[in-house]
Picture 1 (cartoon, rainbow, N blue to C red):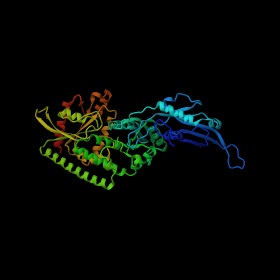
Picture 2 (tube, rainbow, N blue to C red):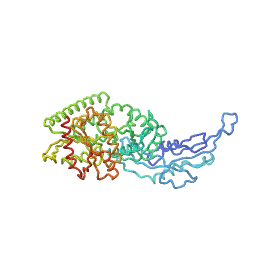
Picture 3 (cartoon, rainbow, N blue to C red):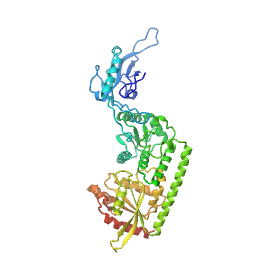
Picture 4 (cartoon, rainbow, N blue to C red):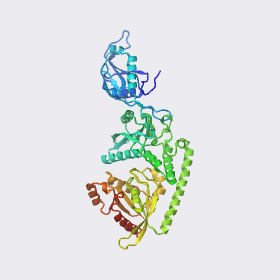
Length: 514
C-alpha cells in the first residue's frame, strides 16, 4: 500500500537492469526522486557468463547499485556502505484546492558497486524506516504564499540573435515577472539554430527544465517568447507544471493594473482573444484555479465555457471598444475645434512619462518604478509662456500606455482606442530612460511600433529622461547621437523649462505644417 506525506516514501521499490557497466543515470535517479521510491536497485548485466543446464539463460549480474533518497541537510552524514550524493528534485505536492503542501528538500544517494550477496543481506525494511525517521526529523513545514508564483525563466537564443539583446530581453522578462507578482528563482538558457516546433527547446533541455523546477520548487515556467497552444500543452505534459509565455505575463500585468472601465474592457478583450485558441487540452491536471500569473482577468468560468459563448463575448467587447473609440474621437474633435495643439507622450514602459506629466501639469497620475504602472490615458492642459513674446500658449498633453519590445498583437488591437491618441496627436514627445542599459534598443523598439501605426504620427521631440542616474559616458554618447534631444530629469525637475519651450516650438511647427 503506497504511503503518503511529504516526509514519507512511497512504499514502492524498483529493480532495473542495464547492459552498461556504470551507475544509474540521472534520468533514472530523477524518476526515483519524483516518485519518492523507497529504493532503486540497478543490476548491471554482462553478456559473458554461463548457460544454465538445458540452455535458455545466459549472462550474469556483474554488479549492483543501491540508490535511495535522503534529506538534503544530511548529505554529509555517511551511510554504512559509503555513497555518492547529489541534490535531487524537491518534493512539491499540490492539493486539489490549488494550495501547495509543505515541501522537503531531498538528495539521492548511490552506493558503490555491490555484489548480489551483499545486496541480499540488506535489510530494506530497516533502511526505509531509518530514512523516514530521518526525513521526519528534518521535515519543516513551509508556509507558501499562494499569491506569489515561484518562477523558472527559460530563454532561447537562435544563431542570428545578438547576445547582448538576448540578455537584455531576459532581464526585462524577469522584471515583468516580478511586476506581475512572481519570484524569479533561476534562468535556464539554450542556444539553438532554430526553435523546436513541438517544445521550443530540445528534449534534453525539457528534462533539465523539469529537474530544475522540481529541485527549486518552482510552480511556474515562463518562456521568453510567444508559445503556440500546442507548444504549451506539450511542455506542460512533459514538465508537469504550468507553462506561460511572455505575452501572458504582460496580459496578467495589464489585468492587475487596469483601473478605469475602458482599461478593464480592453484587457478582458485582449485576454479572451489570447485564451480562445488555448482552451483545448486544459484538463484537471493543468487546472488554473490555483491563482497566480496567467490566471487573473476575465475569470475561470469564462475561460472554461464553450468557444461559441466566448466568441459572442468577444464580439460584444469589440462593439464596446468601438463605442469607446468613437467617444474618444469626439473628444479629440472638440479639442481640435478649440484650436489647442495636442502632444502625446510616448515611450518605453517605465521611461517616466507619467512622472513627467505630473511635473509639467501638476497632475496626480499614479507613478511607480514598475513596468506598466499606468495603463489608462490621461489628458491635461499645459500653459507655457513664450520666452520670446511673453504671451501664454496652451497645449494639451496626453500620457499613453508604455511600449515594449514585441508588443503582443492582441494588445495592439484591443488598445487601439488608446493608441489612437498617438496617431491623432499633432506631435509626439518620445520619453527615454537614459539610465537603462538598453536605452538605445528601447528607442528602436518604440520607433518600430510607431512605424506600424495605421496613421503616420506627427513630428517627434526626443526627451532623454533620468539624466541624474546616467553616467558621463552615456550622456556623451547620447549628446553625440541625438544633438536635438532635450535632456531632463522629471523626478528632480531638471531641464523642464527648456523642455517647455521646446514643446511650444514643437506645437507651433506641427500646427503650421498640417
